[in-house]
View 1 (cartoon, rainbow, N blue to C red):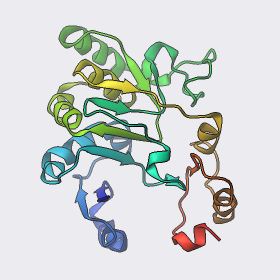
View 2 (tube, one colour):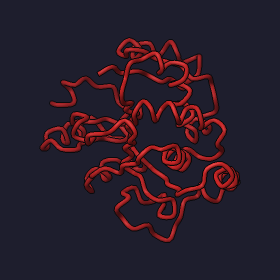
View 3 (cartoon, rainbow, N blue to C red):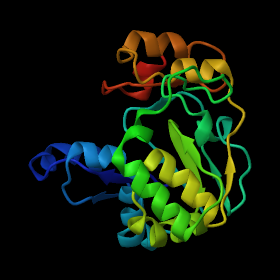
View 4 (cartoon, one colour):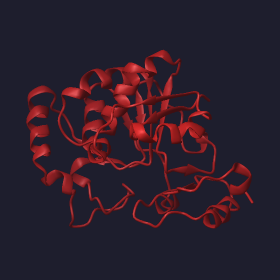
Length: 233
């Protein structure tokens, strides 16, 4: 499977990234933007990659994988059979069920709601949505995503004009453009292992998890450079 990089760091760090670039089939650098913008608009970042770089690569499906996510099982353990018009988002749920403290979409949300919805940008999104699209609204907090090439094409053409935050803009707009959204069958261990608020996984913790039976083993966040042999000691 080809592995393509999408670099969003500063130009001054590009050379330091060279050892990683050599491991990739390609690496495309997004123009410099503030960190908060990149975090809130990663769907636009990926869309720009698709239009400027991705269209030159022969692929049917795009697996979007965060740099600080480590999978210890093959991709097919995490991904069902997908059709070209489908999108897999493990953390998918209707927008009115969002609670930013609840990762697993099968758990009931608490009293807290999404802080993104209290920002002025959300009202601009709603106004644009009602004028141009309509239809149900979704949100997602996902460790990864899988989408077909045709979904990439449609989304990249439409997304730049839509205001808002990627975690509600992407699933809502993708569905409005004809994509079928899949939540996938992920058990409670999946969401326990994927915990953005925990301290980073240590190498010893990863090695302990790697000795457990295969399934949907993943580690997040994991920052340390390690070889495959070290991970499976």
